[in-house]
Image (cartoon, rainbow over all chains, first blue to last red; front, side, top):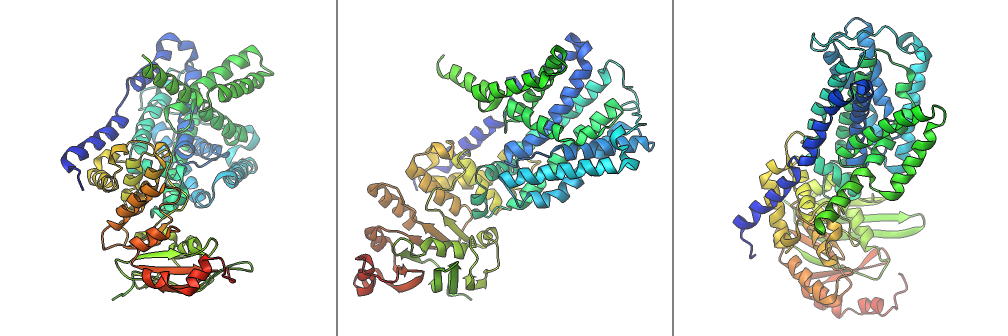
Length: 332
Length: 251
């Protein structure tokens, strides 16, 4: 063979390394998340809702965007986290960070148990199964009203100051700072995961799960792992919602929430990490504006937005953006 | 002790009333270069699916290195050294060639479950993948997504993926399917250049390629093995001629 290992081997690693480097756009994005503190202090409560939604979308992107696992019942894990965090606080332990960790572990456990069913299916059957899991859990929470408060919601949650110092305030300073910090830390973990050998294996499953078996891959075990991780992140998002709003209603487990998170992800672009984050920002802000404009029929505008985005930029907002920048680079 | 790298013992398979494998016995010695030929619908690909575990036989045994693997899942057989390629490209369209093969190497080394370390820390795995691609003359395009590769290069990537699992036995399902004739010779030269530690069984329709690259030829008709022999024996076999002239009644 006529290739020289010394010259050819260093180069492919550099190429892969370049793919994983932090870009200016990423740094700009995270700096921009601090802007609400300065320019829009009236909207900090909304900002905290956006951050929670973004964390939830991030979790869906890991399974849908990277591993190709479709879900219409992802709220099941969000809700498990929310109720767990709420109950821990109600029972007398209002320390938020430990509450957050316990809630994430509880959601992860539920994710792990259900992942054994998930790993066996793909595509349409998976939609039915995840939808079923979501419905089962919501109705269970509804009937177990002695525990969850049922239709009236979970009352009596009190969140202690974060790190023993920062009390939740009416304007949402603490809530947004807390949600944003959690989002950033978990995002760093997700980013590492995506650029790991495991992240590569997930993309392999998304692209061709049959071939994965033919290269000897432990496909089912990969799916169980990522599903459990995603459930934990969804649970963390639910926990933050419970802790910052100090209430939990059945709606955290609802189909609407599962559908919304899917919409945010597709809106922003799947399999890119930042697509989901962008989708969460656009969707939540649009919903806030539209519902202000017309409190009754605002879903009409959301519907229009969805169709417009999918028609104009099929790969989501971020997919469209990256296409534009590539074109701009191609013809300077 | 094992005289066979891979063997089928009395393998049966039917789909409803259609018999696709009837008492198939086949032995592939270590380092073999065997060709599997036969008319369309003879059950050649089915036999590969049976041996790799993609299909489960109704009866009989599959032995890999002397061990009975009949009950093992496909991925389990791959880990024991049985790899295959597909007649119709089955690649990872959005992964680059280097990523695809690196993934296969990581799976073999059982590090693909690691999510807390960066891929680029896996120097040896990446180097090995690049080396495999280089041996198949794919190193120049190793950063292109599989779907953007030329068709012939995709066929080579099929083989690269299989090689990344370090197989002892390699089953190639029409490796040159759809490749222009002059290029298919190159492809077979690459196959012939594979390590002699690997036993190779390939399905191929082009008799010139079969006679040039196979040391033994197995002829399959209607789900069973009609005859096995050296290329010279097969070329002069009256039954084989009858099959290829369309006079076979059993197919």
